[in-house]
Amino acid sequence: KPIARVMHIILNMCFFTLTITGLPLKFNDEEWSKAVIGFLGGANVAGTIHRTAAAILITLFSGAIVMSIRFLLNPKHGKNVWARLMSPDSLWPRKQDWYDFRDMFKWFLDMGPMPKFDRWTYWEKFDFLAVFWGMFAIGISGLILWMPEVTAKFLPGWIFNVAIIVHSDEALLATGFIFTVHFFNTHFIPTKFPMDTVIFTGRIQKYKFLEEKPLYYERLERDGRLEKNKGGAPDILTNLFSSVIGILFLTTGIVLTVLIVISLLT
Image (cartoon, rainbow, N blue to C red; front, side, top):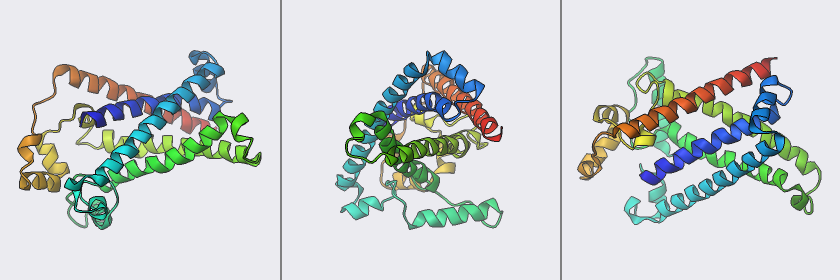
């Protein structure tokens, strides 16, 4: 859906903005962090940019929650809420995900065939649900630190120390996960290298669809929805935009990962 692609682009922009303006505080004694803050115009400007991106991300997250609720209330996904939650179109974990994880592990060890996936793989569901934990942990602690004059009126002083630790360490964890696991799944898998552009173009080639989501393809075909979802190849501008923004995000992530590792080891 176009709304999903737009939300993903905004999410990417907010994430990288928060990372670039937040990491220098985590590693404030490093020369590269001082250079970044200087380039941004100083700590006050960086803080304003950081909070603006955070506000946009919170709004985006709220929109994702609304979309999730609408999914659960839509009867076309199942006769009741539980059926919709456990349906193949849902991002909620189900028993099949455990079987897929087990079979994928066996496939890694050459002990069995690669499992066949439906609309969502178990790692895509993990990516989605991890955002909820991260948003609550980082978001709540960030709001406490954003408005200390307000929160100090009804929260004890030690909460601010906890909020600083939670906000800093959870943000580093989220950054590390995105720049390693998520980047591997979307960029470094041989069949997707240098990037998987489907989230930007909304298009996937038939052979890739059959290879990555064969059960979903079969279900669309069985339900008579396959023809409706067919479309032409993306135009040149869409492909160019996808490639440029994808390479920009990937390069930025790799550079930041290297800086984080060097900072942690020195």
